[in-house]
Image (cartoon, rainbow, N blue to C red):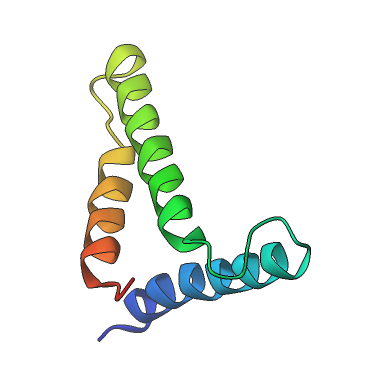
Length: 80
């Protein structure tokens, strides 16, 4: 696997793991709350919003589409 692809997959995993740990230790969520699924849903919603925005304002350059494809690939590969 190319280094950029490996880093591109590992950084979100590390960020979400740290976010999840901080949210649980702060008492923001119950220890057994499905935080990862909620964060994935927010990422999906944000990416869809960006695609819709770009289609409405700059239909020739649809940059967020690559982000959506990467996100769907990540969600498909994740265990949770």
